[in-house]
Image (cartoon, rainbow, N blue to C red):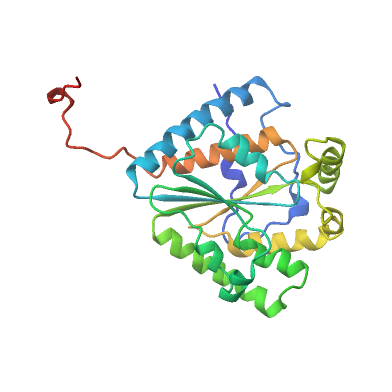
Amino acid sequence: MPKDLHTGRYRLEPGHEVHLSDVDPNDTPGFEGKDEDAQRESKKLNERLRQLQEMLYAEHEQKVLVVLQAMDTGGKDGVINRVFQGINPQGVRVSHFKEPTSEELDHGFLWREHRQVPGNGELTIFNRSHYEGVLIERVHKIVPEDVWRHRYRQINDFERLLSEEDTTILKFYMHIDRDEQKKRLQQRLDDPSKRWKFSDEDLPERKLWKEYMKAYEDALNKTSTEYASWYLIPANHKWYRDLVVSRIIVKAMEKMDLHYPKTTLNPKTMTIE
């Protein structure tokens, strides 16, 4: 039997403040290392997610938005590669949000994200997201405080709109500590196949760790709502991170009561020659 991951423990209840310094990124309750139970469960969850995504696409009525946020090396790409491994790319889309273009800046906050939200039957993954507007733009003082403080309300309104239009929103912050980031950055430097991921900006960004932790705390506390909850995932152990994210997505999609569409075809009356 698969072990109970108690995934509800990672949901941030609206109005309850979280302090990241109190959260252990090494947490793997119920598991002693990467055991066989975890591997078996991951395979079952991946197959179940494949089935649910197919029904979502076929039904063509509801939508799913998965938001992935983390510090550099925190696991956004890893989650996309492993949690969604084998999922039919038809009906699934990954949107990356890097430095905004001049056109995007001309249209203002949330314009580029609104253009990328899922349509009916789609599962869309935001690799970084609209939260960059209260993270990197805050930490680097790209916009003044009176601008980024208003954005929490704007984000909540934006996500409420999506929710009211039949979008299930799942937001994940993958939490690693500074030592784990150091190890992963070093692995990128040491491995020629991963060296391309290392950026000149990684080391200056790392010096702003405390500022980012404060920005993340505020974002998590101010924008975890009943209709768009944050899940704070311990992510020092990649296998556990992926397992928990998979379980949460599968449970949420099972609650959507997805069905294959009914047809008027009667197989008994049809002959294929």
